[in-house]
Structure formats: C-alpha cells, structure tokens
Length: 226
Image (cartoon, rainbow, N blue to C red; front, side):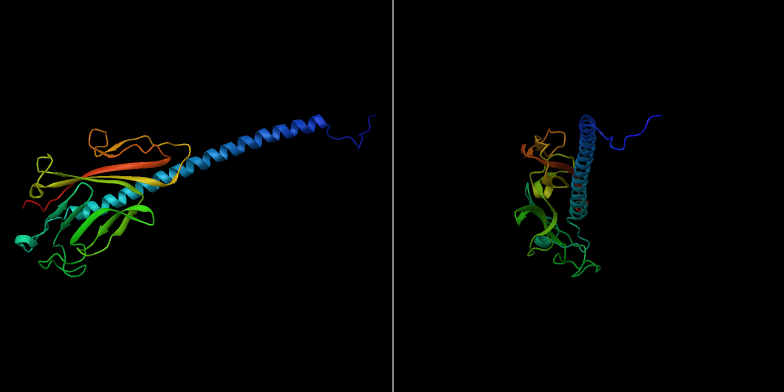
C-alpha cells in the first residue's frame, strides 16, 4: 500500500516550466490584443476620414451646383454667378431664397448662403475647410484636418476654362488627414487633382505618419450659361 505524502509539491523545475509556459501564453494573448486594438484604431481613423470627405463633398456639391441660380432674371453686375475662381478658393452667388431659410427667391443675393465662399483657413493650429455664408461673414468650419483643397474650372466640353464666363462645371479635390499619427505607417503618396496621379500636384508626399484620404468630384453648375 502506497501512502500519499502530504508534503509533496511542485519541484523548482516544474514551477519554472509552468511560469515559462504561462509567460508564452500571456505574451501571445497580449500580442493578439495589441494587433486587434491596432486594427480597430486604424479602421476607426479611416472611417472618420471617409466621413469627413463625404460631409465636405455633400455640402460643396449641393451649393456649387446652385451657382448662378437666377429665377428672378437679375441683370448686370448683381446677376448670380461665379465671382472668384481661384485654384484654392471659390466664391459664387445664387438667388435661392429671401432673407431667411424657407422663403422664396427675392431677386437679391444677400440672404443666407446666397453669397458663398469655400476656402481653407487655420484656427487653433488646425487647418480646416471653411465656408462663408454671406459676403461679409467669417469662416465657419465644415471639416477639420484638411491638407489640400483644389479647384479646376471646366467648360461645357470638359476642357479647362480660362474665363469665368466660360465655366460650366467645377472639379473639386480634397485631401484630409487623420487626427492622430500612426508610427507604423508612413505616407509617401504625392496627391494630384486626378486620383490616378496624372494631374497637377496639390500635396507633395509628406513622409510623415498621418494617414490621408483624397476625393475628387466634378460638379456641374446647372444654372451657368443659361
């Protein structure tokens, strides 16, 4: 008959092996957690970038499309039109309401969002896409962390317009960046106003650790040239 020795326990070697195995398991679990956390953070940043782009394009396309809207047939210098067509800013007018939202066009372009300017500006060390809702308004932010804003003005046949009166559509390119850096990512992309890289450079490769996304859209100004 064999008696169990109550004083028997793990040997030092067994303890060391158990600790080593536990360490390997914990290291694997931590590595998997870190990988999943990293993937989640990247996906969150990319989703935020895409949302910012959609927001910017939504507002700009809706309003630029209305440039030149003139239901009251305003004549002369006050006629709704594109006023300034710069490579990094646009200013245009449209008679789409009266002195307040929900009112009928009144033959003027002094109501809210009837004299609109889109451009970049910096506030609190953050570059933003800004919109001015009237001629004398201050910039209001549309989205933040915008690294590039580019406008190309086109004729009806798609060629570049050199005179404001010939503009029939506007191609807008926007580059936005993440709010946080990713030490494991380096942005070596050179951004042009054609996503396939065949256009003019609008943002040189920054070689930093910010993720960026770009969107380009052509907006037809349905009221111009009528």
